[in-house]
Image (tube, rainbow, N blue to C red):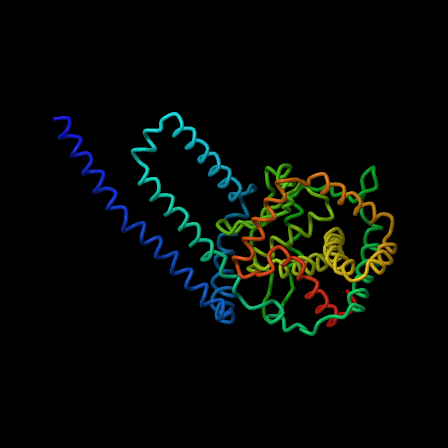
Length: 378
């Protein structure tokens, strides 16, 4: 009798497993379809721009933004925390009750495949197709001629002048370092002002998108070297609030640029710069010029260390204090976690139409120089 029952149970399990295959295969089929679309979209950026990035995507982001605006915490971060907790709880459960794993191994594998396929599919539908939109230079009809080294130095010099002037009116702490003594949610709201009336070609960046959200585990996140993350599943810009203030404000704008559909890192950096200096708040302007200074000076250092140090001496003592503080802060956070995250980020970017990987961030210099040619004075 027991053998007979066991046989019936075995058959029941077999039927159940066979019944799961059509659903799992449908998930894999959808994922494959998305992959085929990506190959097509890589060759048709105008199509992606017209029918997704400028229409479907902003409608989705703004609609969800109306809901996210009233939620002060990051739904994305809570989702990831819940996922990690669920993963470790499952591991512990299977350690103490391995029979659960043995009896349900095929069912578990089916659900894992479906979950991964769903994450992949939704990533591109909700945001990832933006990696294949038109280049910002084409959208804004910017000058594509390569900048000269003299133009690079001249632009850096102007940025330094702006940093020095704006820094004079800003609050600092007891150590003489730039200070912001305002609630993050208020800063996130102020950041939206920089996007008002800013147009690239026929594309307006203003709109009712949700504000940026502070990351609860910011202290630990600093050890990865990450200042912000855009979570496409909830359309939320997430910000590491435990970073130097001159980095904080431009980071908010960088992640908001991702939120507006600019997936490429160099373009998000450029938009962060433009929206920061477009903001009436001097603190945002200061952070924006810091962002430009960082990348411009890095290029100058590569070309000529002598010119780099000559330009650096033109910084005011106050700006130098902020830079020294930032350098010491990030040096104190360096370690294995940052190396791992850099490798993961590099792989992720290369897999999403950014062949330069993490070097894509440095591409902002090309955009800054192009903008400089059209508007020599900021």
